[in-house]
Image 1 (tube, rainbow, N blue to C red):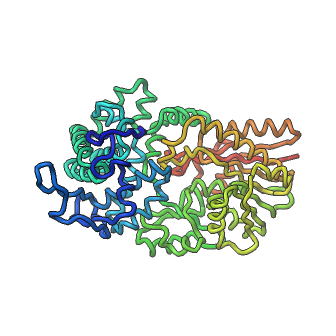
Image 2 (image 1 turned 135 degrees about the horizontal axis):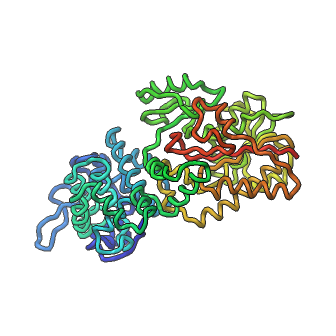
Image 3 (image 1 turned 90 degrees about the vertical axis):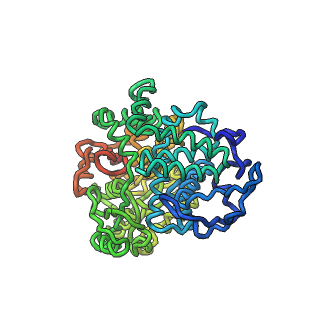
Length: 536
């Protein structure tokens, strides 16, 4: 996505009349009240906003009064979320809920704001490619708030079926509020150009402008080209056809379902489904990939009693499956000391801890950062006392400090998150190839530490939420080579078989020794899991 540049504010380059210093929505609102105003298509105004009344606006050059910008609250909430993502490095799934709560939007308007926010984030690359054909300068020279407004406007009529005239009018008002009337005139002109053609026509032009087929697909499906290339390679490495790439990229742009995890021994799936039905008013269904999963068609999971008291949690089905796989294969001898080496934010630790309680085992949930360790503590609070011990420490040191202590070790390694782009759309614009190299080095260290920390005959599950070969199979290959040179003997177990024994429906990659899940095939995040047994 294009960056931000300063300028005059009259053509989209910098802050306008309202916000010459920063030129974005959030800085305009912090420390001041919210204005009241009439409704608009797609959302109401913030009911708490206090501000200009009719006849009190600023005067123009001819002495006439001009009304202050008065955007509707749903679109304003979406712009604020994009501003936080762009300027603060925030994640939309964390900042949008409090923004919506502060705006006091009803369910319909909150749904509109949510769809608008995530659509503009996921498809920013597509819309930037279209906007670049309509703007006579690099998008990086535009003010950040102006570019955010253009993406929001384009998504409304190209991606949400909002009538073009309504979308343009509302977005112009939004741009005027965020960056001034001069910038809003620029937004008006650009969006009218975009609205002159339908999506298919624009995508054809984007393809024609691309240097090659992969670049065209990456632009149309809104992925950086390096990610599209890496995902194509990952498909090949996992035995898939590279022609599946388009389906995979399309799946990354789809709205993910909200999936709950019924933690074993704390709540049954049928009971959780019944609680969900009463709380959200929609009919849930049981999962296909995880036996603990309950899938919601909509609604706020925070209203469900089992979620509020941590008997259940929100967790992707693929994430649930790989956590269960760490506890599935039978091991000889003692099976009572388990370790989650990288436990934050706690979803897998809670599931593994609940399973440990059923099996008479104890789990050490280790997390390197204190604030994430506190999230783990909250996630496991419903598990009986004495089962889970939450620690704060560097997992790379555990193999040295506690060699051979554990019977089972889960390494849910920090990764690029390229497998969860549906849920974290910002990640695709923040990561680069250098991140993969740096994280792969960390992943190897963690896996080697886990192999040292597990006893002979014990099991290590290596997991990432990325299908990138440098973070998955190549990390395992390199770590096993180093472990062998160090005198260890490691056996690779068939992860696909373990998944088949657990999953209600076998995943697409169940025939392979290392399990790779896919959004376009399994409906999950692209989780990877390798199961390793230390023989000596």
